[in-house]
Length: 318
Ligand SMILES: [Zn+2]
Image 1 (cartoon, helix red, strand yellow):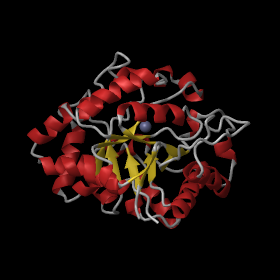
Image 2 (cartoon, helix red, strand yellow):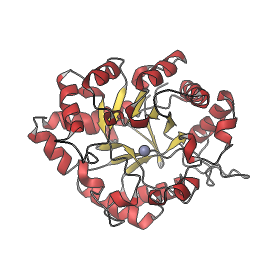
Image 3 (cartoon, protein in one colour):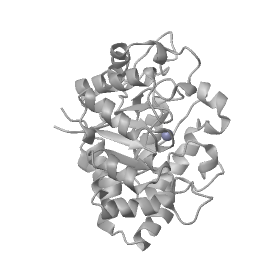
Image 4 (cartoon, helix red, strand yellow):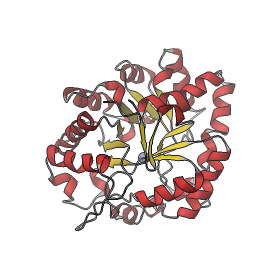
């Protein structure tokens, strides 16, 4: 039986609904927010306000993307989900090294040890202290995916261990894998490394690949069978048109629409309306959906991008 693991429990993939594939709903005070104060998204009431608007605009689910010990707070995510009726998936995993103090546990443990940490999040529940230590108190809220990251152009030794750990975790639990690509690079190496450790491409979602909007590169990525998540749409400023929109159209044309998902990746207060920024989390359901329709995508195409693809990409499979 396949299912999707939300912070409030497991649901049928058929009940996921319109889903944003890479979000940041809560980022608590952490090393990450010390470095990047604009990343601080710690206010439950403001998140509820923004997600209520998302729900009014037709949104039903979001995949949070903050993994272990980087400002994740599963209790806050659970409260927001209960208050807004938006399904929320919370990851286990580990982010880029730069989001942790030097010598942090994620860079010291072996792949097998990391996998043990990740599997416990998925099967037993996420620590209310987010592995801030020294005490671990598991909540009833379990992780619904494995989030991992690699830096620019190639994977270093730590990242190779991390990707192996994700593969071990995936093979034991059936949890889907979501990766961060830095400026869209190293996508093919990520797929290759996970594949060598036994992960099938259709169990993997690569984020931010549209930051490198080269159609030939994307055809190569998508011909492997992975899913991709695009989120640069509202970020393009110094260019004509919208390269992300063009990429969606050309990849749809090339027969890959069943592998494309969209997200906001709005990890900054300045992107949220509730925090006084813009364009706000409803942007994809309002402005960008209109742009895609005007450019020729059908309602069915949009359903694939927002509903059918996330339901397949984020399900657990035995
Ligand atoms: Zn992100």
